[in-house]
Length: 418
Image 1 (cartoon, rainbow, N blue to C red):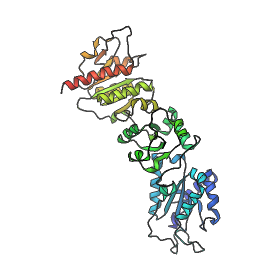
Image 2: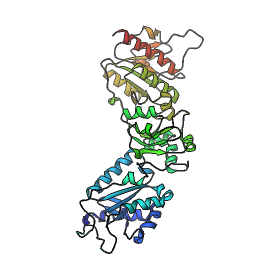
Image 3: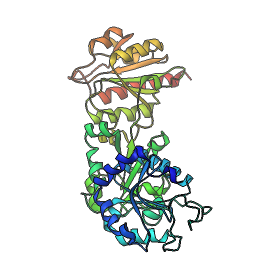
Image 4: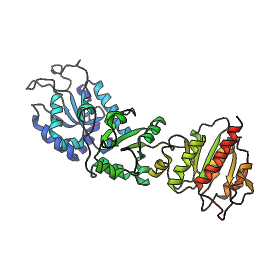
């Protein structure tokens, strides 16, 4: 095995990591260096193949890794699993701990490392690849990992400070720029998280307040225990956007939403929104789309993103239950025509009432904002411009209300055809 250790092509990476050790690594190294821990010699920033591990004990064939914020989402866990799988294929054992455990539970971390020792300490410790090593090559590789390195059944220590790195990272996702940068977003509520999982979203950390929700309820979601992070009531109140989130907040990875990903039924009913700005309106429209059984919702030239916390909140998770896409108006018009879908635009100057329009064939209902309406491109390419007749003094309604009126008329017509 010696030929895969500390190869020249990773020498500079090892050096850089050693010179820029994070505080947790430096702290743990203070307990491991110079064979202080029951006579076992550890190496710091040791490379094995293309990976550089935080700490390595050659005699025990034991790897100890510390995980920071970069590991706390689904892709981070998947990378860790791939890394661990490689190390275990070499009959190495792997223990993983979170950085904060080194500070808050130092003795526990050291005890778990010592519990993983299986050789007899002494001068007979062998180097990597030495056939005289006392380590049993046939003993099963133990990840120890998340289970042994994170307390009990893969559970994290309770977070009680809003200054915790995970909490700071979570709060940053309230900003659109940070969501786009990290390609992550926040989901509040068990039902909403369940919808996301059913739609194939990858969930990273799930923060929960034990005063508000039981662990058994969360385990019913089918998530690995290692993703469940308990927080205090004070911390949860800080990270919660809505009042009734049920004590559960998750971080999830974004998806790409393109027109060519939409699957159409034989007689599709599409809902199109141009330039919608208010997250509450978008969320309400997504609820309507779910209730009416719309095939897909397309947002043209969006002024707010699907993953705004207020969109998810106001949609009650329906952002995950329908096909959604984002595109320019021009791209969408071209896509509709290619798929032979009629375009019906709601338009203040139209003369045709919405309830006099045939919605039983493949069609798209196009809505603009209350303030500016639709752009000229839509009006010119429309197969029919329709209006909701007003009986009072105002000439328009909120876009989410207008959407519900027209979409459910379309649903009524389609149901009567059956």
